[in-house]
Length: 266
Image (cartoon, rainbow, N blue to C red; front, side, top):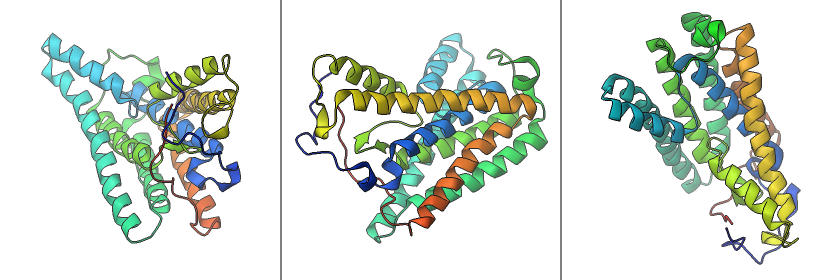
């Protein structure tokens, strides 16, 4: 993959000049939140709440098996994710046209909804298949767990649409296949050329993307561990992360918090 981008040739701004939601540490924590969301939905509903490629594969499998009942759930997960992204897109456009930042609203609403989902998971789902017997993707999971997983997918869609840039570069904090691709692309490019796009080194770009991957995997690990103690605890992790970022944005007076428009990718 070429390292030429639509934004090439411009020196990269200092990290402190990037909007809040483009900072590398924020990208790490957003990926951590996504990993934790997947931990619960995978264990309790046998689905990925953020990584929709897995759900689409599942749709194809159950379709060829002729099991429309099991086909329906991953299809609904993809739809819920898409609706979350679409609604967030409407809100983003509305706020941008009025000159207001959309980041605070997305963070706060996402946090509140996740707290509600976490409480419902603890009260209604109980110990769950994931906690009692490990992750069993062939198990029949409860309808309640399915509904909550769909709600998480909806929030993940909004998060992925609202926050999709890291240091000026397009990336995915809820769907990381592209991040894996970019991390290894920049890593190998660094062996041939030190300087990368926008004035930053290729090895720095590789590090940024690997940092996101670490967050995603770390969030999943922490989430699975939290659910061993109390099923549903993993959902509180992204709720706390989004709320903490909201207060950081508040401390900045909600200035320079939204990701910049446009983007580049190698």
